[in-house]
Length: 202
Image 1 (cartoon, helix red, strand yellow):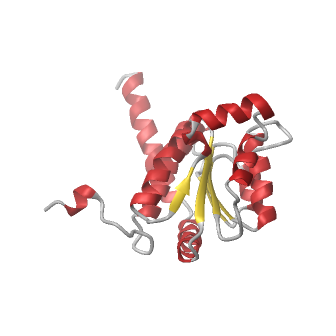
Image 2 (spheres, helix red, strand yellow):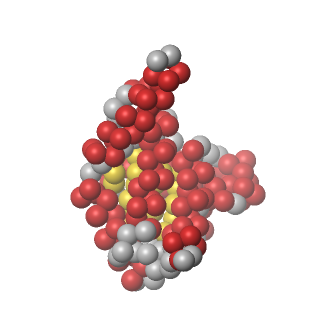
């Protein structure tokens, strides 16, 4: 077996191990929170940067279309996002977007982040500021994060930390399993409101 094949086998074996280690109770807590948000006609604001931003845009679609939850992401509107960054700065870009969205106690914030945010290390400080404000207004906070979960885990109502099985692949595994977890959530019997296309085709 050459090095390339060895890496493929190692990566997929690690993915299988992560699947075994994911905290099922944390996932269930996230489902329960989202059920309550939908029941109260709350909205879901999904935040992420880098790969997490891409996941956020995809998740917005799934929560709206499959779970019937009104959902938005600041990174889906590049004009507003870049205007806020240009005029006010990166750190405040998400929190000011939440303020303009009039986030309130009926709503929720869903974070996709490898670090979870860390103001002391100046990592994803825009997430930290947004989460502080969300907590102030009483919005629920959930997330799928990597490493130690950062600031997100410290204040979240429920969060899944993607277990680190290899320090060399923290980012790809975390971002990949963010998709695994949110797809699990939107297809959960308590949340799925609409059938998906290929599951409905006979």
